[in-house]
Every structure is written in structure tokens, then in C-alpha cells.
Amino acid sequence: MASDAARRAWRGFIIAASFVFYAGWDWRFCFLLAFSILWNQLFALAIHAREDARARKWLLAGALSGNLVLLAYFKYVGFFITSTNNLFAVVGIDVPVEARSVILPVGMALSTRQRNAAFRVSAGVLNARVSLGLVFSLAAMTSS
Image 1 (cartoon, rainbow, N blue to C red):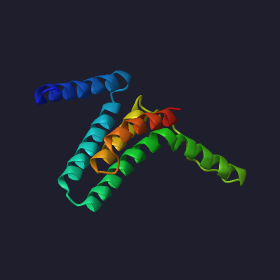
Image 2: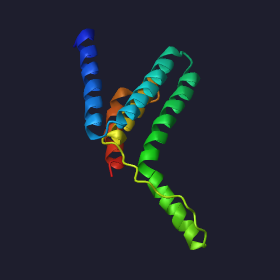
Image 3: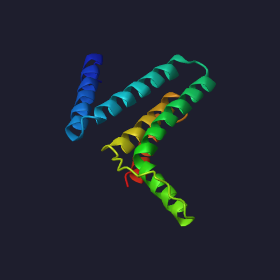
């Protein structure tokens, strides 16, 4: 078993490597990564601080919702804007909303699924053995 110091050092290394990786692609995604880390850490601390199962599940719902909204924005906003424009064009209404090319940061779908499974384990909704399989099966579905 690794010591607490080794675990903290590894965690620090992984966080730093994540920032370097994102910055190497587009430095602006570092703000997204920082927000995501802060969001998830605050919810994780709040979930662990609660004894009441109902409160933990509400916090879990908030954490999962935030993660999924962020993922949905990057994955689907262009599709919905284009579809809405096409739908209005069929009935002759010109909607001047232009679909921007929103690029999904590499690994965002997998890391979102991983965090969501970890939250569900910490809130007592899933057991740890189920969560690993869930992460990989959901990652396969969302990677397209």
C-alpha cells in the first residue's frame, strides 16, 4: 500500500500533467480544467461531510448535473444550433444564430464518466466494483 505522501505526490503529478496536456493543446482549456476540478472537489467534500443519505443524494445530483451540462455543451451545442436553424428554415424563418465550432477537449467524456461514477460510489449509490465497469462501458458509448 502506498503511503499518504506518495499518494499526494502522485495526485499532484497527475494534476500538473493534466494542465500541461490541456495547455499544450489550447491553454484556454486550463480554465475549464480548473473549474471542473474545483466543482468536483467542493461537491466531494460536501458529500463526505453529510451523514444523511438524502442530503448526499441531492448533492450527488448537483455534482452529476454540473458535469453532464459541461459535457453536453461541448458535445452537442453545435448540433442543436444547426438543427434548430434547419427546422426554422423549413418553415421560412431565418434565425441568425450561427453554429460555432465547439471542440470537445480530449478526454473530457471519459473523465466526466469517471468522476460521475466516483461520486456515485462516495454517495453510496454504487459499489466500487460496479463503478469501474460502468466507467469503461459509458466511456465506450460516449467516445464517438
